[in-house]
Length: 300
Image 1 (cartoon, one colour):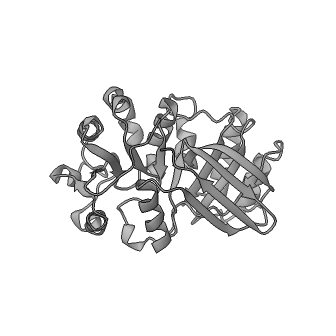
Image 2: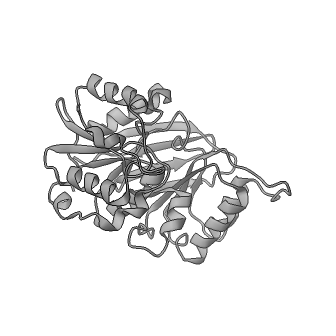
C-alpha cells in the first residue's frame, strides 16, 4: 500500500477515541499543525465528556467512524492515550477506510488501532499525540513532521548493556505492552511471526511486566520474531517486598530461549523524546557494540 503523505493544506482530523481532553490541552498541538501548513479538523464533539471518556462508547465510535470514512481527511491524530479504544474497536467499520486509507497517528491506548490496522495490512504511525505535545523535544516533533510528509526516519542512539547484538530487518508491530496483553486472542492482536516487536510501558509494576511477558511467551507470540525492540520503561515500580529483578532483566529472561537481537532504550514511549516510528513498513535496526542505528523507510 502507498501511504498518502501530507502536503500544504492537508486536512488532519483530531479525534478522541478514549479519554477526554480540554480545549486548553489541545491548543498547542492545533497551533502546531497550522504552523506546518496543515488544516486541523475537529468540532465541539472533541471535548465531550462521559465519566473519564470523551463521550460514551457509541458517541466516540460514531465520531471516529465519520472521520475515517471522510475521503477529504488525510490523517487522523489520536488526541491522547489513557483507556477506551478497546471498548469501541469492534463497532468501527473499516470498509470505506480501506478504499481510501489515511494515516492514523498515536500510541499507548492507540495500540488497539495499530493492531487492527496491522491485521488489515495498513501501515500506521506510532508517535506523540496532542496531549502534552508542547512538552515534546524538538527531535520528537520533527520526527512526526518528517513521517507525516513522507521522509524516511533514521535514529542513532547509544547501545544499552542489556542489548543482544544483531541486525533486525522487517516490519515493526506492537505498542504498549499492557494494551497488547489485553488484546491476546482477539482479532486486533497483530501477527508477530516474522515481525519486529516493539513494546513500551509506563506506570506498571515489575511483576506485572513479568506476567505479561510470560503470557506472550506461553501464547507462542515471542518465538518467531525478527527481533525485539523496547522503548520507554517509564515510572516502573517495585513492591515493598522487591521482585528481585530489574524490568530489563525480566524482559531479557522472557526471551532467553530465542536467538534474535534485542534492543533496549529505543527513543519512543511515555517520555518527552517520543520519536515517530512507522508500523507495518520495512525497517532495519542494527544493534552493535556501542550504538544502535535505526532506519524506517517511508513507502511512496
